[in-house]
Length: 427
Ligand code: NAD
Image (cartoon, rainbow, N blue to C red; front, side):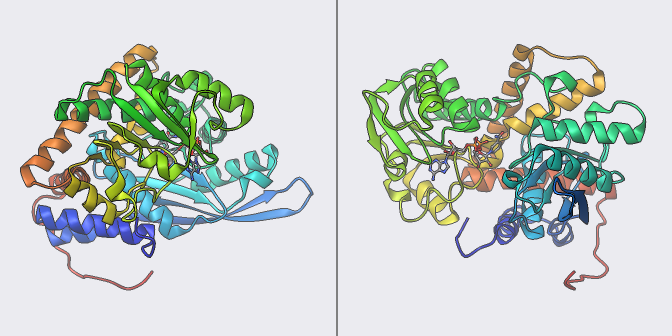
């Protein structure tokens, strides 16, 4: 994402590029620029000190032509309606590109969870849920965790929703604890998807996965699990990092041991036998596969030329800026865009809801096999689109996603979609 551009501006530009390449009907393009519904709520919460806290929240529902809205809920002091709108739009594309039957949504509450007690967070979550009650549900909009919300938050939402209904409705949210209908394999699903995509890219380029050198930026949920899964598949993990810095070892690291070391010391750095490196050096490490799994805006026009990896698999959201995209494409780097590479989490969220609705549960092996099939098909669909139109994988992913949503709108409305009034009034 360009520094001067907001997330929403980037999202609209991406839509514009895809619309132009697809020669999308202007009416459909106009529809997809705006969310179908944005709900703003004011959440009053009894705080531990006896005062009443008032928090602003929202739920943005972008498009649901292909199925119920789906997307996470984020608790963060800087949440804005524009950012949540962009995130909702990206969810529409992410679900469409991997061909799961959902639309896109996102929710946000302006609060600082680090300064709130568990009781305050529970009361906030329950009140927020009750304000959304008429707009969410298994067939309407299915929330999930996002920044600073987790399985516990989802269990509170499920419990509040079920209390209002009068019976248990586990399928109203995903990312729940296993004890209340969560799915096996959900925790590492995003990373497994990232590594499967990298494996497919390696196959396409004729790189042997066994012994392929991998560098991973970020050692949180996505980074550590990706390093572990790649290692288990036979890759050689040569560098990893976290916010304190990185480590490099030409002979290869054991990610399980690095995880233990990080658990004890708080960071991956200063591991015996490894060289400490900076995060900049990690990105420029000589390797076959680079997995950025930390933050946005890591590969920019300043360092894109120095990237030596043959494959970049975006575990994080938005780690590569649009200028860097161009540079990597020209250099022949095979980039797997975030909406495809990190879609494993939402794919297994879909499986979680399917299991809840059947009330019949799959083993971890079954979940993994279905994830592999879904994400591999999506990878191949995007690759075909990229080859057919001679565009990079990111543009191809957006084209495929926008086309699938547009096709659903057209099928539902018939071909004669015309805009009577092109209103651009600011709301
Ligand atoms: P996390 O908080 O568990 O881990 C983030 C990691 O990044 C930590 O190890 C942290 O030390 C490291 N980090 C922070 N600043 C850094 C820096 N400047 N340089 C290097 N490392 C740094 O988060 P996560 O759940 O692993 O998510 C990582 C990224 O993946 C985010 O962009 C997130 O939006 C995206 N993502 C996550 C999921 C999921 O299922 N968790 C799904 C899709 C996308």
